Image (cartoon, rainbow, N blue to C red; front, side, top):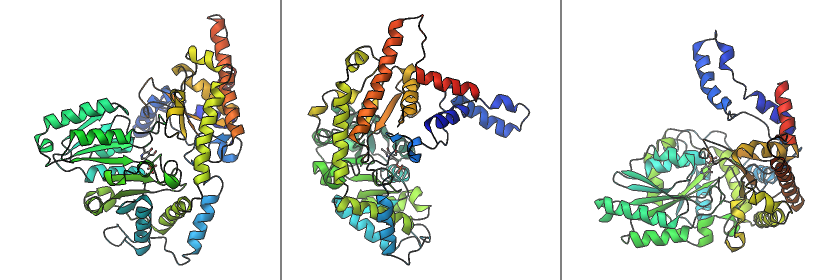
Length: 466
Ligand SMILES: Cc1ncc(COP(=O)(O)O)c(C=O)c1O
């Protein structure tokens, strides 16, 4: 599917439907009325096939971070793993607690635990399921959860099932705000103050919408200071750090060498490791707690051999060091993007006028880690115009909108991959700046000028024909 076809189909899906169903069955009309609320502000999710999948555009959006999927490397590693186990079963036989346990899954879990320097690992169906399991099972009545305000939706959904007494957010990556919230929990909860209950601190290594890295060591230090009895424990979601940060891509916790200070870690396999599933790391008490109290683990079929074999194949690629080149390449690409776009003659004016902004570009040289996610901001009303321009120029990138981010904070999320080239990055930076120049010209011409940039005109013309 070309980018133009993809956009045309997306536009078609944004047309209101309920008004055409006045005499239809009320059940379906009511569903469409609810969907029309999304269509009305062009936020209806659809099932489009991205143009990069057909080779007609460059991928600056997918979660195939190390490009192990796109290059076929993951497929060959998986097939090799299958060949080593020709008599494999497609079924697991039941819940993990009943007939779903088997030797191979236990062996792979131990290998993964060893790789990350953890005591145990538990494989589950997805990162979403893992967060539901962790937050519904681990906090005990009387515990508190202190969480970064930008934690993933799955953590929020997990927390909505928690037994914790209170849940308190702190400002994103803000160590002072963390200190204030921790202090206020200590002051207000005698059982936590006397050390008989715990504070569970929930953070992510890399935040998926902002692309910034958690100041984990600083947070650990504050928590030790505020909770000297050692009853503040950390749960770290490494979904976006897996394969990207740390030795052989083991994650932020391994990169910082703080394995012993973190109670629970989550690694997902649907991103850099190009398959599906997730792994919860912790000690034996944590694993038994999840297996005994997490309904999302108890009342579901255990992951079967193909899922676990794919996870093992992905981990083998990390462990052998095969992915390290791609890991380093992503760091270099992001630097190259920052320097290329910042040296474009349009950049300064576009940033001064508020037409372009990349928060992560400021002082990137002083940061310990660069990651694959770079949010690109423009005026809220220009967001789609820039996306149309990128898509029609052969660069796949998507807007991130409400409800994924708060209203008024829409942005375009660029994701850099192992298989992207320096030329791709230069093309991307030039395309963004060409569009910015067009917008500068439009804005400078003032009210009488034709206000819509070329790519948007093309898309609106498509819209008129749908
Ligand atoms: C931080 C974070 N945690 C958890 C998940 C869920 O992982 P999965 O896609 O395996 O369900 C995601 C997915 O985007 C994520 O970004």
